[in-house]
Length: 216
Ligand SMILES: [Zn+2]
Image (cartoon, rainbow, N blue to C red; front, side):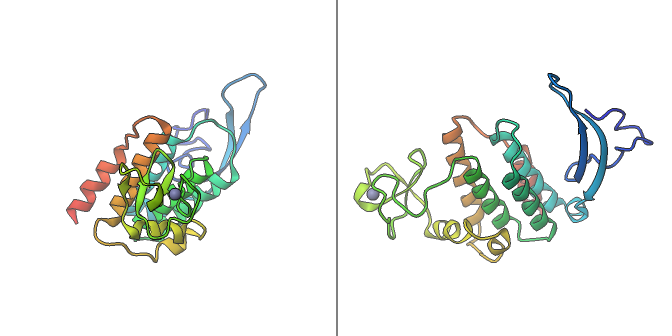
């Protein structure tokens, strides 16, 4: 709770905006559910995100994804740093989609929903060149274990995850996919997550982003 935050003379005015990184002091009372903000100082306004509608929509999409998929309120330093790093990369300008997809893949791993990319989810062996994908089973399936019901994932998407999952987001920016490839990648992440969370993920900012992209 930030008392009076909307008043022009409030010390919080302008500092608790969307995508503003702040150093916040909270007063916490035993037994109360809500903390009270006592001080806020801005670390980063992410000016470049605010001034570019596409960067803004991508940032909203990533945050909305986290709001849909994160549960609990435990502090997590790795997640805090991941969010900062995703926003830093959006603020640096296009390309946005590789950062979005790699950021989501990293978030999935931090929340315990890692996708198995390197080994067959059935036998644990190297799946070689297999492009078979069993989302409910947790990832890739080798040719020997195939039951015929798996989806096929483009080799480029598998290669993208292999390259980016252990490297910083800056690396992902350098990887190009075919036209529409990142959207395919995003849809794969979405259906994978929906299966494991056992609920639909509704993302309002995705349709905003689609409108913006169709205008270009
Ligand atoms: Zn196998």
